[in-house]
View (cartoon, rainbow, N blue to C red):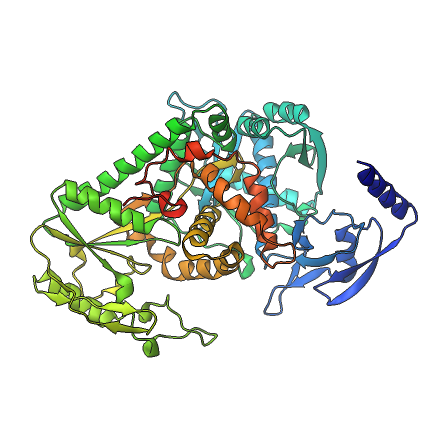
Length: 587
């Protein structure tokens, strides 16, 4: 206590005496002297008004990394620091932009529809899916949506542009829990009230824009003036808030109306509501009151029902379909999905056989290389497409073929006498990243193939206007699994994740609408499980690590979630898809 008081007195003395502080600015590559108490915004205006976005593009500064920790530009410098100013070219800059844009949208909706509430529900390939909802839900717990017309959407967008043009400042204020509860209750933001209660802190940061308040779990831009690029498009029951493209911040993301993906996300969102879990606050309450095991059982039953439904679809087409392809992004649980689906097919009298598409890699010397000259194992031509297509057609004709095994150590295909033939009730199940790409098997009759897209499409939100990234959810899954099974340190998972995402954007996401069925592998209870395993791993990452910025962001996110206890985790059945990541699976 005495040391803390002395530290505060020292800071006060330094400010009074305007002691100069030296900071290292990564953008300029030099040390800079600033007066004690100077804000990052003042420093940026003086030495780094823009950042290099590549291709000669100068981008406005949106936030800063201070000793690898994300800070808003109103942060005051009172100690020496390493500072890097970031713009839209940086993931944290993009998140800062999007959060700020969401606040502008929130203000406009509150202004135009004071008796309703904005819900920023989940991410779409083209932006954020939003709905304007009535305060009271329907009898079954699902939200009652107010359907906005195209004319109303034009007015919302026009009003947002007015607020951006006015360059209004965002202001942050520390408020007590009771003050926050009154504020958000008056705004009809019940999820936000529940979240704050479930966390149980005494004080919270609240942002204000033009006199209206809200909470966003990360920094905002200094003002609205930088938020010039966005668009609003009607989508399903609500609308899509489109923000700038990564790599071209002057243009919004292209509109992709991927109905199958959107349907799966909407279904999960409605199911969360029906289960009484319309946000993390309600999920936390179920953990704290001891009713989480019931939710685990219901969520597992939903998965079983979905597996059975997909198996039924395959069975109905048994006269033609002999091959099932399963694809999905990293850590979606594709392996568990293929095994559970195989069990359901066996129940119906089918005899599933599994072949790993990885066995069809070309020999190492034939593997294509990327722009850096490194082997590109995710490229479509890294697979022996001629052999794959020929063997599939031979199997469909009833012939016996010798399935290869790929030796990853030697980098070549081996033929070791593994023979296979498809009989009347046999069905072939294959899983791989290119499984939804028709170019993988151009010479195979498409009527013989049933395609499944598996992904962890969580629609659970932190609160009304802060959605949870499906990518973050999958990264936590991968971190826990790879540390347990391969000894991969969490830093490596974080540092490789952007490369993983680039591969998914190139090889998986463009083909997800080719699926005959979508399996959503997300569990409503999984974040409290993943927190139990991932939080200790993230806390090992040193502040000097390049992965620390992302680790700190993930830890801040997990702070809003109450973890399950070991006895509650034990209630997760051994066939659960989550067991693929946390151990204990018996499939």
